[in-house]
Amino acid sequence: AFDVLVVGGGPAGAAAAVYAARKGIRTGVAAERFGGQVLDTMAIENLISVEHTEGPKLAAALEANVRANDVDVMNLQRAEALVPPAKPGELVEVKLANGASLFSRSVILSTGARWRQMGVPGEDQYRNKGVAYCPHCDGPLFKGKRVAVIGGGNSGVEAAIDLAGIVAHVTLVEYDVKLRADEVLQRKLRSLPNVEVVLNAQTTEVLGDGRRVTGLAMRDRASDEVRQLELEGVFVQIGLLPNTEWLKGSVELSPRGEIVVDAHGRTSVPGVFAAGDATTVPYKQIVIAMGAGATASLAAFDYLIRHSAP
Ligand code: FAD
Image (cartoon, rainbow, N blue to C red; front, side):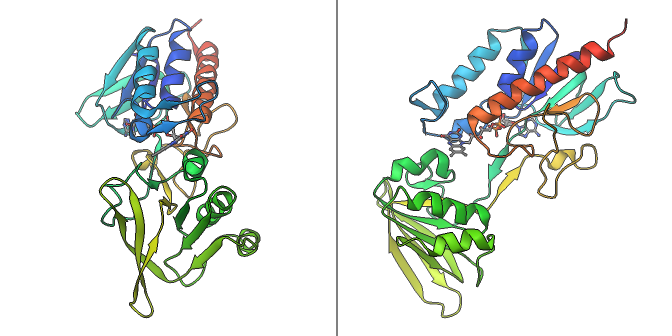
């Protein structure tokens, strides 16, 4: 059995594994795809002290950092269920999709999240070529350009307000007949001169020239009329889905499916900790996930020294 088993190999999981291994305890990482969301990212310019890197390069660096320590890395392993310990200090079981089970005295859940996609033609083709999901990450790349934000919930309206300060023009596209964001955000949005809000509109296609995004096609749901916007960027803000479906019933989740953690990364299950985008931590970013991974790992170590046989 492991002392610390990390499930998930993104920035949070990598940080957790490095911190655990450096305590000289038996550490393992099981990950479906080591590197996580970072693998799908192009330019990264807000990982403090690293002026510029690229996703695949950072993912390789995370893995090298983990492997330089004494960590059992199990890549391409999908966890399907977690069985809590019979009592604090006893083993936690993680069942894998391949039928095997891993046992550990503590577990750190860092299975991350995924952006909900629109599922329209052009979205996949132009991902990182104008189609973006993270305004904090990619907003500055669109300085002085025209963008659309898809989604009129809090994250969409916040993104539109944020981007309006950087880009030339923002069109906020909402499927429903009204925005769902908090009133205070809507008021702020309406006060901005370079934002247009389009309601009751269904995005039908992301348009491009083969290299980059050049526009967006949408259908007015009342008139069926199709309108095309010329623009350089599309920010999709229709939801971030935590990869926690497999934890339902074993660990407490928030109404949005995020693993509920306290300031130490403790979950509702003794010996089970969590970090990163899969949790209730506010703001989903690499540097935040790394810090949370370190926190959860130190909390797991703290738990182990309190629950080890004398
Ligand atoms: P993830 O990176 O999502 O990693 C989750 C890990 O868990 C993966 O290894 C995954 O395979 C694994 N996993 C999932 N389910 C299971 C399972 N059931 N069993 C086993 N393993 C599982 N942030 C920034 O700070 N700066 C940026 O510039 C930036 N750009 C971004 C661009 C894009 C296109 C995207 C999608 C995100 C971007 N982000 C950026 C956000 C950042 O990538 C995330 O905040 C960060 O990766 C979260 O780390 P994590 O370790 O919590 O989860």
